[in-house]
Length: 420
Image (cartoon, rainbow, N blue to C red; front, side, top):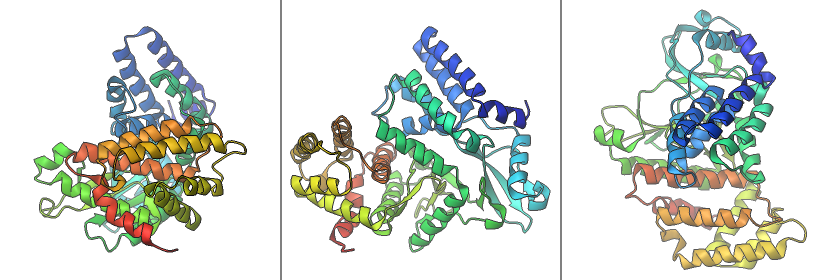
């Protein structure tokens, strides 16, 4: 099927509906294990927000049943690639020139395929080796219907649908990832902020070979940021985790602009002779990034201080200032927040908690707060909380002997002591 016809069928929702109908039938008739494997294949073929489910499952091992997570885990790294002819057409349309005019070499076999785009190795005409990220050609056109059907897919695969606040954040972040111009600007901003960190590298953007749906960056040889892979090369997973956590803590607490998608498909160790003695971490894919505005940073600082000091009134007052509490809902919200405070106090010193306890408390707080009528969390705050959660989950996978909270504490304390 040609790309034009396939895009048309997707724009009408026909392709998605047909595949999801088969998924529903499989869920109803096939054994659970086979149905889950089939679901992963279907979501991978659909790409976009459907395949995003695999990334969510990969970083939150405590949310889904083990068999569900195992089936979806492959979507983190193994989304089926598009044919080379489709990619050529997409790149030439976006850049306004043939591949041969822009590149001395463009590898037809992709380096990898993910939910939003697939990446191809290439060489510019001046000899520079690059990676070209090419967005799937139909996504911008089908985003609305894809998001609506993704919610249906969640119910079919997981047996539940997310709450409205979580869903709004998912939809917003997906839409922002489709804008490669914004992604390039975010990458350049974060690269400048981290320029003094020798153990962190952000690939340079090649502006003349980038557009709204094509992003070209320098190519760097890498190792996967997985515990077994690093140990096999003599690289300490704990040392790598320390670099990642400190880089994120700086972005979140000092810079206020951060890469918001810290899973193993977006973080790598640079493959170089000095990697075992002094590893360097490569950050890629800045489609999901966020800037915390001055007001939110002030309220976040006040909220954390109120939480650490057990000052419930101050915490609730900050929620009111941020418009998080609907009219008449304060009594119920106050009761829920008070219960959350009590659980945190019962866990001991918040800055000395284990990563497992932090994740457990986060899940308890989320369940408590999202079940409270009249409470609406700002999307920026949700993305911040999700990023922090991803970091703790990555720490558990990469170096369970380490303590993410302890590594981030110096940056958090500087943030709390600052006056803006």
